[in-house]
Structures are given as C-alpha cells and as structure tokens.
Amino acid sequence: MRDFDIIVVGAGPSGLAFARALEGSGLRIALIERQAAEVLADPPVDGREIALTHRSVDMLDRLGAWSSIPPDQVFALRSARVYNGRSALALGFDPDGGPEDHLGCLVSNHLIRQSLFAAIEGQGGVTLLAGTGVEHVHADRAGARVFLADGRTVTAKLIVAADSRFSVIREQLGIGAEINRLGRSMLVVRVAHDRPNHGIATEWFDYRQTIAMLPLGEHRSSAVLTLSSAAMEPIAAYPPEVLAAEIEERFDGRLGPMRCVSAPHVYPLATTYARHFVSDSAALIGDAAVGMHPVTAHGFNLGLQSAETLSGLLRSAAEKRRSIASPLLLRRYEARHRLATRPLYSGTNLLVRLYTAEDRRARIARHAALGAAAHILPVNTVINRMLQRH
Ligand SMILES: Cc1cc2nc3c(=O)[nH]c(=O)nc-3n(C[C@H](O)[C@H](O)[C@H](O)COP(=O)(O)OP(=O)(O)OC[C@H]3O[C@@H](n4cnc5c(N)ncnc54)[C@H](O)[C@@H]3O)c2cc1C
Image (cartoon, rainbow, N blue to C red; front, side):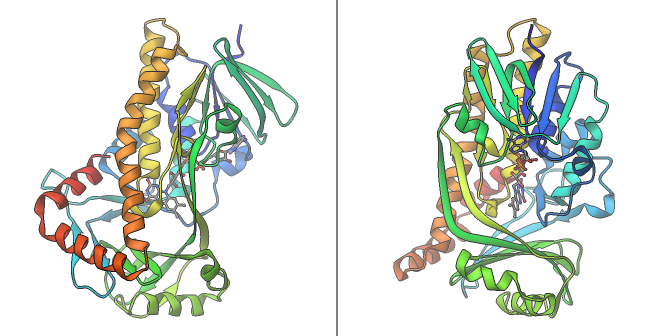
C-alpha cells in the first residue's frame, strides 16, 4: 500500500492549482513544499504582475481562488501595443469583439499564491508537508518514492513535479530539458506617473533594452526593464528616486514624471522546455514542464492549463477506477500539453530573438516584420486569438 496516490512537489501557483483541481476526486495527495506553511499562507511580494487570460480567471474562479483576490487589486488590461525602436509603427492587440471588453487582467503573483493556498487549506485528501524540501526521488513503473530533507520517506502511485523551471525533480527523473540562459535580466518595479496609461500595456523594444509598462490603474504601472545582466547590476542598486528617473528617461518620458512605489525585484532570464513531460509514474507541470520567457506573459497561464489537463485525466481515471499512472494516460497528457505549448514557446523565443538582436541587418528585418505584421490583419488577428484563448 502506497502512502498516497499522488505526491506533488512544489506548492507554487501551479502545484497548488493542480492539487486544488483534484478536490472531490477521492485521490490522496501529498503536497511537499520547501517553504514554511506560514510563508505559503502569506507569501512575500515578489514584484511579478501576472497577466491572466479570461480562461485563467475562469479556472481560478472554479478553483475557488478568485473571490478572495481583492477586486481593487485586479487591473483590467484593455489592450497592448508593441513598439520597435523609434518607429511609429506599433503592433496592437485589442479584445477580439467577444463578450469581454478587455484582453485580460493583471494580478500580483503573491496574491494568486495566497488565494490558491487559502482555497486548498482544509481540502479533504490533501496532506501538506511544508518546510521541508525533497532531497531525492525514485520512480519506476511500480510507483514513486520520495526522500525528504528531514529524513522521512513517502511513497505514491504518481509523482508530479511542480518545482520551477530549474526543476531538480525533473533531473532526478532523468528527463532532459532545453535550457537557454539568456544573459539578460528583468527588473520589475511599481511606478506612479503623472500621465494616464488608459489601461494599455506598452512593450517597447529599443536599442539594447526592452521596457514595458503594465497598467495598474490609470496613474500606476509595473515597469519591466530588460537589459544585459551586467548592465542591470548597478541599476538594481540605485536609490528609489534615481531608479525612477532612470526608468522615466528610458521610457522617453511618455508617461511623464515617475516615482517608485515599490522595491525593485530582478529576475535573470532563462527559458526552459522539458524534452518529455512524463516518465514512469511521473509527470511535470507548470514551469517544470515549460519555462516561458515572461515577455508574452504566458508562463502561469500555461501552468494553469497543465494543471487543468492533467487533473482532468486523473479525475476521470479515478472515477472509472482505472490506473492513475498508466503510460497511456501520461502520454495523453504529454501530447495535449505539448500541442498547447510548443508553438507559443517557439514563437515567443523567435519574437525575443528578432526584437533583441542588435546588428543592423536584424534591426532592418525587425522593422520590416513589424511593419508587415501591423498591416496584415490576419497576422494580428491570429496573435490576438492565441493570446486570448490561452
Ligand atoms: C518577472 C516575471 C513576470 C511574469 N509575468 C507573467 C505573466 O504576466 N503571466 C504569466 O502567465 N506568467 C508570468 N510569469 C511566469 C510565472 O511567474 C510562472 O510561470 C509561475 O510562477 C510558475 O509557477 P510554478 O508553480 O510552476 O513554479 P514556481 O512559481 O517556480 O514555484 C515552484 C515551487 O516549488 C518549490 N520547490 C522547488 N524545489 C523544491 C524542492 N526540491 N522541494 C520542495 N519544494 C520545492 C519552490 O519553493 C516553489 O514554491 C512571470 C515570471 C516572471 C519572472
């Protein structure tokens, strides 16, 4: 007899959403997280403002995690504009004429984590083993065995790794991954500004920098600055007023005078894509499966989708009293999630390469590509649909 049906490693937003999606399935789940339960209940601000699609909001709602996010902390994303250098041409993304009058909304990552954790607390069938990391795992056709840092060992029919894009569990399962360390870092900081943003997100690819402004109310934005990691280091250490002036200047004063209203957070950028999403008695979800570049804001949206896809298959197998770790079920999950993510992952990386290459030829090519895309309606429409469906 195994201790649990499923062991989930990582109570980040994907692991929490996955465990929550199995509510009422009758499956016995262990959720193992290195951070302490008190930290999970009240996660620190990490500067990430997550752009959620309508589909993700619906799912958070079904998981019982949407209603506990304060409405005044949910910011509508009316549309988005992508600019290339000094060119006046912009790629525009607007709602596609459906029932919603906005593209999606922005919510701070720590609030998503907090509300998912609150939703899962007390959920029947879930055992939280917090404050201890996983040291080692072994999985084969017979099931999974997990060795915890505190010396305990737990077993299950299936292990689900949700332990971030640098997943150690993935490695220990023998699953390789494409890992691209980009040598660039992303700084995020909340700024207040004099001019209104009209709920429009702006992404500006300029020489040696990318700067985005995500609207958090008319006169507040999350400034997202991407530079080489070497160039970022001194900037990240600036005092708030110097940092605000730097961002204002780098954004060409488009939103008027600025001041920082939060501490900055810096993320070194790396994209990852696991070569397989499953192996014997094991599956990867969230960033452990697909670590997207944040520029197209898909990471957690796809993480939620992985949780939804896998939990749906497991729930249905449990209802029919079939094996929850059968190779067929796991392969089905892998096929579905690959189909949902590979085009977006490759497309995003291509976009990043196109827009961040600095040589003259690349700059001319990107100008031409942006010009073409801005004028060819189907291109815009396809990207729009892609953005809004996921
Ligand atoms: C600046 C920035 C902006 C972003 N913006 C967006 C956006 O707009 N839209 C969007 O959809 N996504 C966005 N993302 C991506 C999003 O934040 C991630 O996709 C999401 O956090 C992934 O969640 P996860 O649960 O898979 O992994 P993580 O959030 O990395 O959580 C992993 C968890 O596993 C735990 N863990 C790790 N190893 C172990 C171990 N050995 N034992 C036990 N526990 C372990 C960790 O403590 C952690 O709690 C952004 C990311 C960044 C950096």
